[in-house]
Length: 537
Image 1 (cartoon, rainbow, N blue to C red):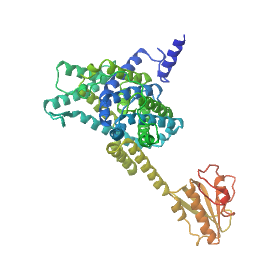
Image 2 (image 1 turned 90 degrees about the vertical axis):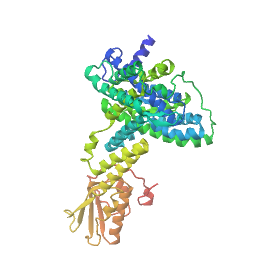
Image 3 (image 1 turned 45 degrees about the vertical axis):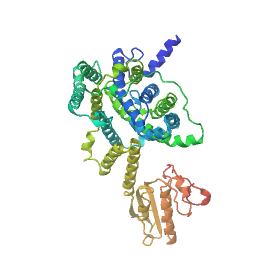
Image 4 (image 1 turned 30 degrees about the horizontal axis):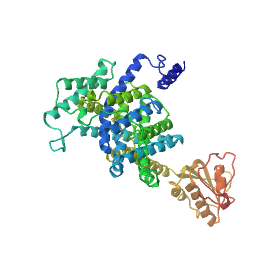
């Protein structure tokens, strides 16, 4: 009975909320699709993990172990069923300097610390800030990533010459490889029109690999990159000195890797969520990624994060539950332990064709048309994020995109501050300024330029019914205007301010006119009432 309960609890984790209620939530047909999707992903993971290991300057098994451990843990505990995680190029390009200068043991220690940082981010629920990424940044992200995936596949067309130098493929080998790539892409496109019993990418890989092996075609194979054969990953504590000097070395790398990993994972989580109509799970994904990297560091892996290319392969192959990700990780381990010779015979052209189809499916082609419709600032952000993703890295691109979007928003909002001027209906001879638009640091200067104390009457009323006091800069601007009217010997009254503004604007007792319909929103600034003025800590 206990084993039955354990199995029921496990299958419940694998089941999406709207799954059919058969075989613990998975029908035989869906279960088969999930497993086959996992097999397809595992085949695509092999050359990626090996290539990224070379980029980082470590043994290929270090990348393969990371793909297995990170993929398995995040598949079970991650925030989005159907997402695939593993060793990625975005992390590898940061790791190469660390490995070259200090060695692979420092990399393992860094990956452990990276994981602990990611767990902390998840526990503090900081993952929710990914909601602040604007849609133009998302478009630039997917476009840039599509270009990066495409450029990465071009490296597979390089081979070693007689002197051991990397040169571009040429002659019959090039033309046969291109033919197999096109054949793979055509099969992926045609297969769903014929049958859906087998995921199209898996069918294409199988048929192209069979043709290459049967006819002994002279094309690069997976085994030409490196040997995949290995044993089970073993637990080991990184061989580094546990002191402050080591921490000074690994902490900067750990912070950068944690940021890049979480940004790529959370953006992939949003993208997969849009495709599968799922929401939430950001904090859960942060904790799962952190736990996976912490464990990976103790088992000789290079760490990893979500992989948008493999996630797209999985989702488009029919993978919708945790079973597909778990299957991919287990198949990858089986390749390492038992089937390395078979996998090494697969032509790289088949896997390149699969990734080219991922590029076509990932790139937001509608954004090319949208560029001429949306505001120029949004078009600029899309192009900027795409270029920074390609020429720098994903984390930098997203940060740059968010900053530029925020600055554009602040600039546009600052231009909206204005005032309607009319005589007061209740106080004879007084003039009313009806302020419209948000008052914050960007519009503070424009707000002060609205007034001319020398030409105004003895009593001036500022009505904030259609405005919002946002920050401390806004309060300082109001006090600056009040000071000018005081110097001119005139009285300034403020209406429709929130209660915390009443407390802060205490420079002159006659400033505030109490109203029953004053708003009751809170103001996010620090102040010291004892100073009798606005202040910051």
